[in-house]
Length: 354
Image (cartoon, rainbow, N blue to C red; front, side):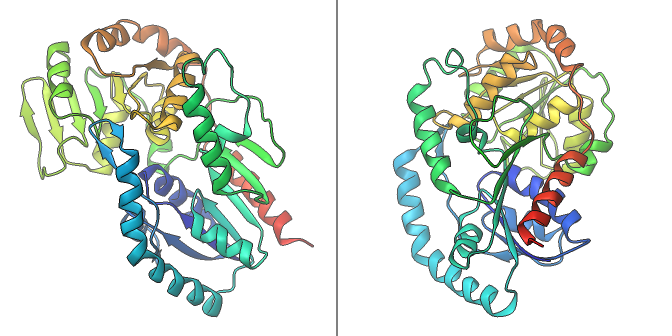
């Protein structure tokens, strides 16, 4: 089977999840991968061929989405990006001619498939916003951003052949052709064995440089911090804080031995921490409702806490309740990636037809 696979480049969680799927699919099928943003470099390190396209990006300032800057940024990007995408479109049409498309919240592959009446399978975590019912009491105070996010997600990949939704929480499904499945995890995470450590693993890329270090220093616990200082080539120590340049292997090592995790609301790290039974204090990016929803469910399940801002009070309360979170996490089980891949292969077979 010839598969066109699209990966959105905004947020590395899409790339890490897609890497898992692509490594399996490539064993049995011809796969043409298109990706945008940072996903291109990440996937090219692990796959023989990845074709760059232009894709939507989000503008941030501090720990918040800047909506107007996002619009301007994407209008400027489209001027150069769309000609590149048009060339890629005709290249696929001429050289590959796919039988089915898989989209990880990526528009180019979806539009190509719809134009040529090719079945599209959605593989992501975002569709949980639109294709499930969420408790009204949990959404209290978030009604407007929820409705806006649901409208955006619904418009992204409408009328796909099937929606496979990665999730560690399971609200009731409200729409047809939707299957909720455990998160897709990197092999390195699946092979990791959790141990008890003293340090907090901190992952923040958009938080203010001023408030986060001060809060962590005042907490007094050893912290290993990723993402905040991207210029580093080696560790930088400041009291109880150790800033680290990103290394996938060392990050997973620090995750599996962490006392707990302090991070945004990104789905991938949250699901990896849940798998390794590490409590999470989630501080979502303001204006990014998908992250907020992840954090609200994390808190509802007792796997950690949601905080709109990282304060000393929020951090101290989280650490003080860590054992309660650990007890809830002990109930979480996941059978590798077997369920997800079985469901995907089933939908591919259905999409291919008799």
